[in-house]
View 1: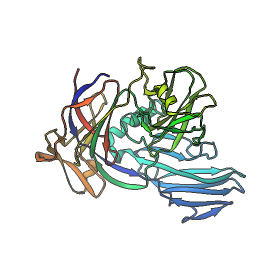
View 2 (view 1 turned 180 degrees about the horizontal axis):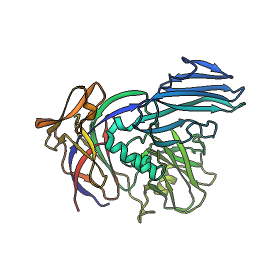
View 3 (view 1 turned 90 degrees about the horizontal axis):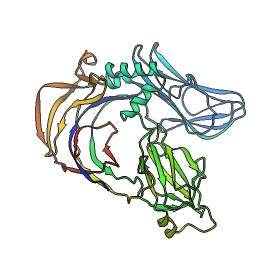
View 4 (view 1 turned 180 degrees about the vertical axis):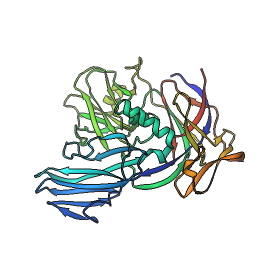
Amino acid sequence: MAIKRLYDTLVGATVNVNQLYNPTRVEYGAFPFTKNGIEFTLLDGRIILNGTATADTSALGFAKIVSGHKYYRKNLKSNPFNIFSYYPLDDESIVNATGDNEYAVMTIPNGTTVTNYKYSGMIIDLTAYFGSSIADYIYSLETATAGAGVAKLKEWGFFTGEYIPYNAGTLESVEARSHVMRGFNCTNGAWTLGNISADGTLDSTRTCARASDYFRVIPNAEYCLSTQVITAQKRIVWYDSDHNFIRRDNTNSQSTIYTATAPSNASYGLWCVNYNNSDTVTENIINSLSLCVNISSDRNGEYEPYHEYSYDLGTDTLRGLFKLDSENNLYTDGDRKASDGTITRYYGTRAYQSGDESLADAITDGTTTVYKLTTPTTEQSTPFTNPQICDPDGTEEYVTENGVPVGHETRYQL
């Protein structure tokens, strides 16, 4: 186990969080309503569908957009089957607005029965969210290669979850609460009896064991599930940030190692092993497996106990802007918090003033504006530990209050 140290400084940034698809704005009026045998209700910002369609049944939703702005668009559905079709058909994409409304259509074919199916769309104004420079860059990637703009946003840590509720626009800034370092083994080994089926259903099959605790995953990263014996079939099951089931990857091979790549919208995983005999899985059996889940590397097949270190970062709000450098790398220009608790404020807040949306060093939601100060100020807050323990073969995570990715300047021990 290679333990090293890092030295950290936190850097703030602010975004204008928005999600403009409002499911209450459908052409049939207020919820609930029934059309062609399908009952449409609304729960927690999502459309819930129940019934059997007596004809092809569609519902059209709207979002107000601004011509010339760049938008991230996503269609969401809870079922694993190809029951709904959409216009536009893209699941996720970056688009340039050319009108005043964006439409999302879902269609339930005649004769289809749906039970508590959920649907919602997401339409996010990237120009308002980041400012035009970042939004235009993301759009340029998407137009050059379909999906590249979406992939870059996720690489940066944005829109990795499943659903954002309707929000006309609210400023949110970095609120780092803790810094968590995990080692080579991603899973703590806690387990329970039972299998995870191909559709995500949990059962109590007594020849299988599954993780009882989720482990954090990095989207699109390859993971290795390994055991030290060859009699266990292996499965890795992926979930989004709300712990909704995405898919199960598995092998019937008796090899000691199995690798699978996390989906682009994955945030969590569970492991599952089938001991492949008629005996009930016991603690002795699980211990003999020496189970390990790690980011795939030349160490695949090794076992290392799970270890984790968590450091409290305080409760501060750090404002600023996300910007691009000369090579289009994302960085944060904002308030800075040192480990001794000193915060240097480079950005302030004030009520919106006409023209704020056009300022180079400001971001606004139309009510409040975060702007760059002429003269920085300092204040004292709670300190945090420096240096911090880290593992070169592990992962680190900034736990936030609101999901805004945390800016930081980190020096690692070589």
